[in-house]
Length: 303
Image 1 (cartoon, rainbow, N blue to C red):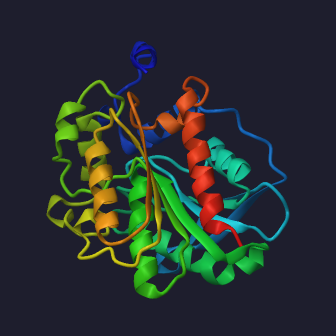
Image 2 (image 1 turned 45 degrees about the horizontal axis):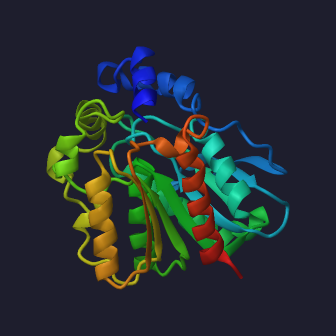
Image 3 (image 1 turned 90 degrees about the horizontal axis):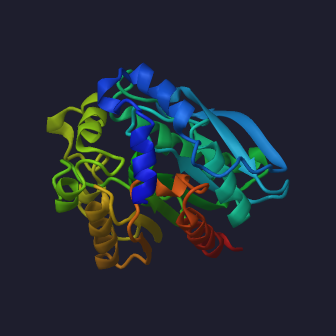
């Protein structure tokens, strides 16, 4: 991992916080899959438009390893609520579909600062409700439903799982890959890995400042560790990286879930950084993490 970080530094990529959101989005599209596995061919890849928050439609993309009536994972991409989209996470979603045997619906939720908090939350909740009630229109089985995401998408997945409990949407699994769960980025791991470990403190502050005012950050829809209780939420598969500013809050969320009686499968990958799961060309551990996620999906979504 250290050698890979050196290579990334030598590439001279501009830090996110020195770019405008529009510039950062373009840069992320160019670089997001450079280290990722090649895009796996699948029998079914379909562009969709599904309901988002406020009655608006959101672009989405369906990935399926067969044309059968498959269970479905709603996938919410990372990118600090400001960058990322269907193209930046295409390879990852293909791998999840291929390895798990389930369909993956990736949501292109609205981004800040044009659409600040809680727009991304509202879009995620609307998409989850759509899949729970209308998956049949896509030839999928909405009674076997999971939600997942990485980084900011992991945050959205966690709060979607709480919302599913509160609204009676049956949910089989929440797949949380290096999720953010705290309000103020103030854990020891944020200090320990503040610089030089891919996701820097300046970038986190830049993302948060574009997405949500400081005085709103204890809202559980932004920081699920602030939720009053987690009793009865869906079982969880949580994938963390040891050298990640977000690792402490991921561990804390796993502890909160377990204390609430929720089954948790926790995978902590030693010596790796944030976003490692998208580095399969360079890191064998990325494939191991994908297999762990796929196994959790298969177990939770079996008939």
